[in-house]
Amino acid sequence: MKFNPDVSSSRRKARKAHFGAHSEARRKLMSANLSKELQARHGVRSMPIRTDDEVLITRGMYKTREGKVTAVYRKKWVVHVERISREKVNGSTVPVGIPASALVITKLKMDKDRKAKLEAKSKNKEGGKTDVAMSNVD
Picture 1 (cartoon, rainbow, N blue to C red):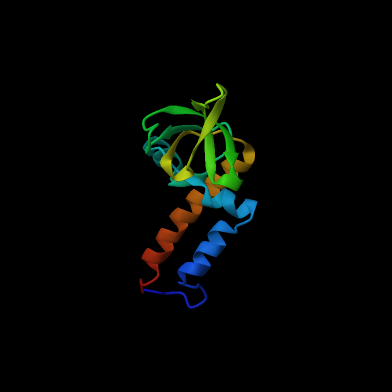
Picture 2: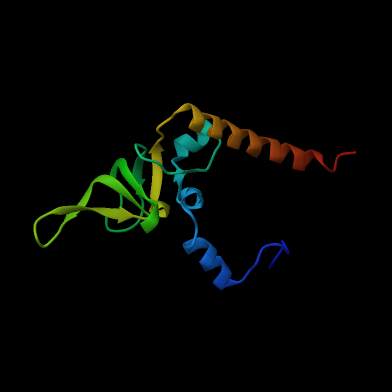
């Protein structure tokens, strides 16, 4: 059921917005869940994936393999993970693209901006819950 009259529920428009998204919007769309330990530590469920994060592949042919993210290829909606490659017919090796939704982040590459974003997300999550719980007390 549609709750917000300002947002279209048209499949055509949703697909156009998704596949026609610019790079900064794709960054957010290419988020991956954090591991259970990271979720517990930071109080955040998912984060946009970036180079140098360590990930675990959860679906597909490379399931259960771990590695460091070498590239986030936003144009093709895929992430390249180190040691996940295949050999072409001519003998050269190419990295295999893994969808961001098939990954779990096991170790975050932290910098000050990312740390601030994590704190803001967890504070927002905690603040939202308490406001909703206390809104009908009187």
